[in-house]
Length: 228
Image (cartoon, rainbow, N blue to C red):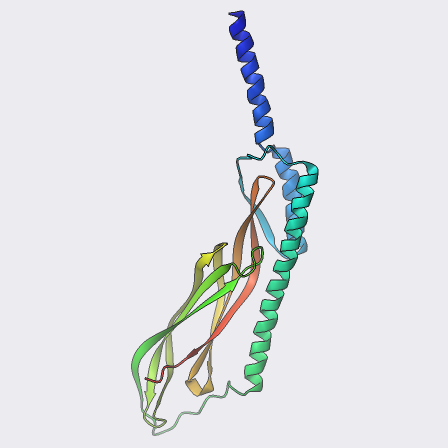
């Protein structure tokens, strides 16, 4: 009986030791999360805890945690720069089409007869990413009528029927479209399609998985009206 009690006590002691080694305490998770959130806020990200993972690396020392935080900070700096470049490219594109006078729309002609011939869909796949640069693909499409002008003797875009952007593949966990816009260019022969949205990416550090949200990504493309 005495041997059995000793065995049980020894087993419990070993079990407690294993738990202390292979789990992350609530206090350490809280302290780590405060540091991760502070980094996220510094570089323009929203950060939430997704999951406390089974800690199979025997726990991380303070030095190891600091090393991983440095790696994370480098990723966040690169991610902020990627988002800034995304905005700069979108602004440069919009300035260029204004300079080129592509917003000019031909006025309607009194003798013009318009006939909706069919609908057409144009897709766009664009890669974005902050924590994982260019590692997430967003799929976009626009569907619109194609009209025939008897006066101009050509096709041009008519009524927009549908448009959408969505997460297609890659590292991203979620894409939330926040806005969209369609602009007619080139007298109706081109549609400028724009989407805005927020991207969620997951990243693990110290046995804790976090969701990082980068906001206001911009996706744009031109949809040319088919010739027939």
